[in-house]
Image (cartoon, rainbow, N blue to C red; front, side, top):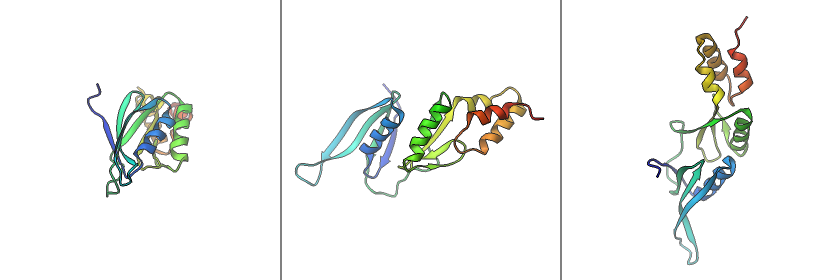
Length: 159
């Protein structure tokens, strides 16, 4: 059993957002949908949707329009195997009403922040040659979506 679960507050898009994230990442499912009686006699309002992505559970709440919004202080980090995986997630999350930020960060159409990071970035920043790692860091600081080939080029000695 998962001990800690990320709980996401939406105004009224919890069910839509859960389905969107499952479709985006392709490895997920709705675990449970909790409905409460709505104002109409035959209508039930979705209040909580529990869903999984890659075996990790999340809870999405329809909390109503409050002054609560996702911001940069919390993000979901996605480690990608290669550039193709980065490109796939990035193009979906940004291309469907999201916004590019810097250094592999983006904001999706719901305002949730994501870091879409190829494992090659972590490897480059951990290079045993401090000068190469610094070049990789400088290259990354100039990117929005992380470009694996530009990282590899930055690792090469300059001169």
